[in-house]
Image 1 (cartoon, helix red, strand yellow):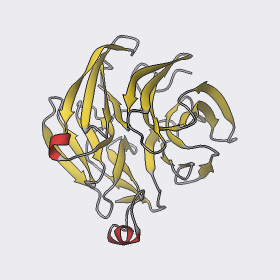
Image 2 (cartoon, rainbow, N blue to C red):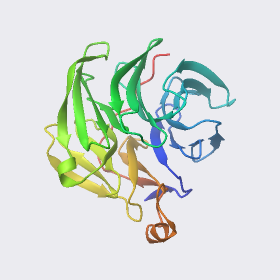
Image 3 (cartoon, rainbow, N blue to C red):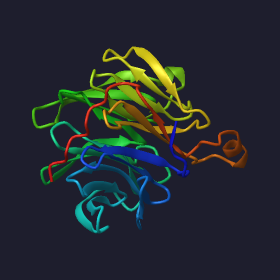
Length: 278
């Protein structure tokens, strides 16, 4: 059930590396990248990554994107994004080899953030005036993307062209605000089902391609589930990061698994994370 018991202040960005057969994840507020075997501290907030090669990741940080060599810990700047008052948050590679990530105010200021895409040497802001960007994930065939503004409680859907750029305007695909749910990170499985960590609810909820609720996987002892990812040898294990952020001593005592990384075997069939086109 627990993949790693080291508590993260704000666990995020789990990535199952298909070549290394290893899970990576971030503790944003402690500026750290983790795996079971090692941890890498940084001078800036880091939050999400895609894989470029066996040893190199593309990392989203408070200043933008950089390449990171896992063997030498070398950082190579790629592109600047955001401002001095923002940091990165959720992010994921798309099926075309692009990399999407969100920026947000360091105090979650209303409308201070945006969602960006890096693709073959070009960085574009896609959607602006977002407070807490999350739920970035992609249809199995690469024809659509999802994202959310957690502060609004709505998951959006937007069509993509053959190169993975949005075409048309996003539409509300799932309105979770009515149920008082907070959409956080998300991933789509091989059957097109949408798995969404719901901050404060202590679960990852699964929805069909039509937005209908199908099931939920609870994160016992951790109410602040933040992001899911499929991994393991056959991509059927659901990994879930969680967080301690905003919890006082009493809350931390009542929810002792908060901040830890969960692993739930045989949940669904996931898809390999796409390689980022450098």
